[in-house]
Length: 342
Image 1 (cartoon, rainbow, N blue to C red):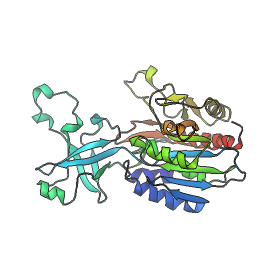
Image 2: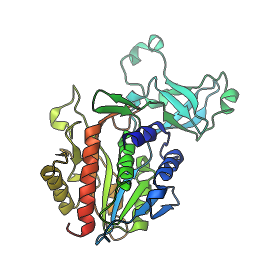
Image 3: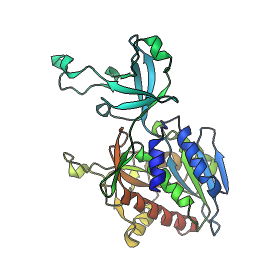
Image 4: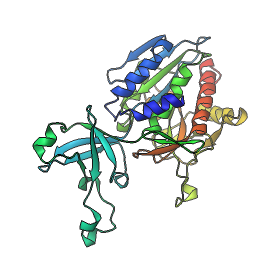
């Protein structure tokens, strides 16, 4: 699972351009699946038979995409103006290295240097609109030879271990869920299960909504990320979850209230079986569970999340033990859901 997670995080797949991650996942799961389909939007659905036929159709889902940037205009000086894809905070952009387009043209995000900043602007948080990407071009014509408006830009962040249990990299907030699904597909399943690797998670979860419409699940378990704000300077009362305390299970989020029976079962499984679980102390945020719940006539949903620091930023951090807890909890919860006992 760790090897897959590293490879997934190092691939570039900004929302709407998930081909590289999709191709890698397909390569790994094609021989593990009884049926694989690629939807019109690019999401992947895999069906794997278990030892028993499922009484409830269960869908396990994770997003493949990542937050990034998109080139919008080339200046006369050969610098690239851009917009964000996702909700990356402008404070996290200054000085970051990026890769642009399929050719992975290297660039760096710049602003007016501090020694040239006007006195009245000193100390202000720079806005994204004031930033440009420098690719070393001397003119608009030179830049246009390798970059065009509409080219997507991924952050250049290498996946690495931090200490004994932590990792850092880009896109952990989505790819950890993909790695969990791939690990489960490598196991012998108790019941038939659908696995969905969805596109466009950072742009409103259209991929997950479409996949749920096609699969028509009775129950959906979304594997995403919960914002871990367990760092100095953060109000402890506003910290939703912490690294190293296990899978994060919530009771609701910004656009949905999770199924009560699934929530109680997830907490019970985590506590009784030692899977490692923490109740997310916040109802803010969102996942693709909200989009799935409203599919067709409605789907019973819940999100099992990996606690992640610095979500949507160029560099994120997470705990390997938490990802293992998510794996264990999803394995047990999906089996119970498929058996019809929840």
